[in-house]
Length: 190
Ligand SMILES: Cc1cc2nc3c(=O)[nH]c(=O)nc-3n(C[C@H](O)[C@H](O)[C@H](O)COP(=O)(O)O)c2cc1C
Image 1 (cartoon, rainbow, N blue to C red):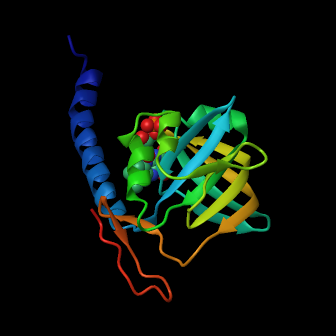
Image 2 (cartoon, rainbow, N blue to C red):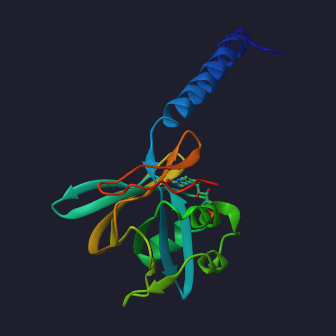
C-alpha cells in the first residue's frame, strides 16, 4: 500500500531521474569538445608497477610547482599510488596511441602494461616512460574525495622534457593531434 507521501515521491522521482540522465548526456557532449592532452600516470608500490591513461592533468601553481590529477577510486592504480605517496605524469607523444590503449584497459591491469613502451625507474623506484613528451615526477601533497574520484595534488620534484611539442590529444571520444611550433608534419591516427 502506497501512502500519500510515497505517492508524491513516486510522482516526482521519475522526471527527476530523467532530468539527471539528460544532464549526464549533455555533460558528456560538452566534455567531448574539451580537447585534452593524454598522459599515463605511473607509480610503484611493494615492487609492483601500476599505470593508467588519463586526461585529467591540470597545472595548479608555480609556488610551489604542482599539478592535480583525478583518479577513479576503482582504478587499479588508486590505492597503491596513495600508499606509494608518489607518481609520475608521462605526457604522451602524438604517436603513442598503443601506449594510451594499453594503459586504459587494452592490456589487463598489472605490470604487463609496462611491456608497451620503454620504461625505466628513477632513484625512488618511480617508473617513467623514457620517450614521453615530458615526465613530471611528483610527491603526493593533498588528496580529496569527490563522487567516484580522488583529486590528488602532486608537488613536483623533478621534470624531464624531450623533443618538439607534439602531444597526443583526445577529443570527441577519439585520439587526434595538434601541430606544435616548428612541427610541420601530421602523425596518421589509426
Ligand atoms: C583518453 C582517456 C582518458 C582517461 N582519463 C582518465 C582520468 O583522467 N581518470 C581516470 O580515473 N580514468 C581515466 N580514463 C580511464 C582509465 O584509463 C581506464 O578506466 C583504466 O582502464 C582504469 O584502470 P585499470 O584498468 O587499471 O583499473 C581515461 C581513459 C582514456 C581512454
